[in-house]
Image (cartoon, rainbow, N blue to C red; front, side):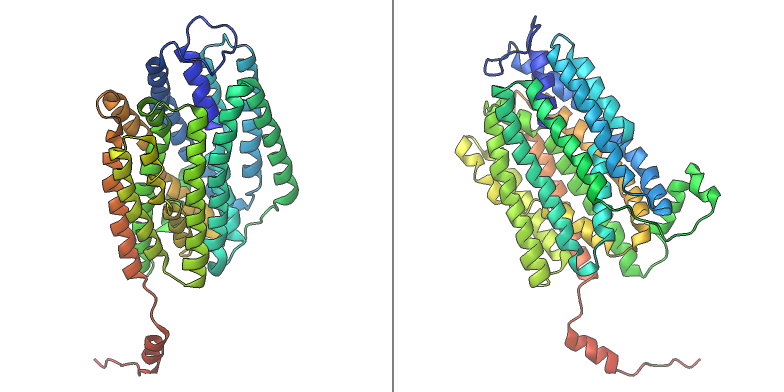
Length: 431
């Protein structure tokens, strides 16, 4: 739906004196003006929405740990999405409504209850709670793979629908899918019950949520565990910063530099993300589950390849060259999947909510990727549109180094060495 909203803002701002929904197969009156408007939306509003999601999630995740009611936070964002789509249907039917009103509609309903980020967070928590350490990486990967698959499929289908059916019918189809999602959630997702006992004062004192969450996540542990947790939070921040920033403007990069339309971009995204899903499943099923390769080693490999993929986008001049770059991004989805799964192994089921509360605090840094990348692209659009990839390369390289550290800190001991350690008699120091 993000691509549909982006194109709605673009079409409403790049065409002048239009009172009915235009034919998207016709050129804009001022393409650059439309792109500038949408990048300003990313800079001002979507960044604010992401920050508000973070603030809301910090309290809600911790609250769900204490009360165990995770299911309602899968239902509420879906209801808010249904209301948002209903409003957008009205605003596309009456095309004369300004683009600013459509933007504020999205902002209002996204801020209302956390939006997709809230839904995705509690979907992960549900997977963590119903999985053990052996199959958690696999199940988390399947969840991320399905979410990732939805992006190219929706982009390709929505691009075709916007061109041939228009915005109104596209939003109606999204509305039907959202209602179906709400029904499936109500029927099939079970309500979890927290085993943690707390006092009523702790339950309702919002001022204690952040300190208590930080206290639980960073409680006293063995030195290697504590250091590993900090490294994994830093990795999540670096990879999230790049992913969030690139995703906010990559469509405009292709549209402005290579003159792509919605359908071409959707087809390319489908090709790119299907390869990413195959790579992610290969890492989780073959490398992680079958070959028992360490999570840190898999993560380092994925971010190392992402460092080189930025070079491909920078030096690409023809469309066929762009289709070679995703070969380096085949493990793109692994970086965050492995990080979240690895991090969850240091916590119990009753601590997952507060883990994600602290995770959201670090995610505030990742949301700065939206304004940073938007400003860089807007300033360098006419001179060197791929400048923002020069920021992605060092961030991905830092993630590679940090993943390597986590591997050496948590490197599994071979069974033979472990048996020898157990056979050695313990030394008693006499003072």
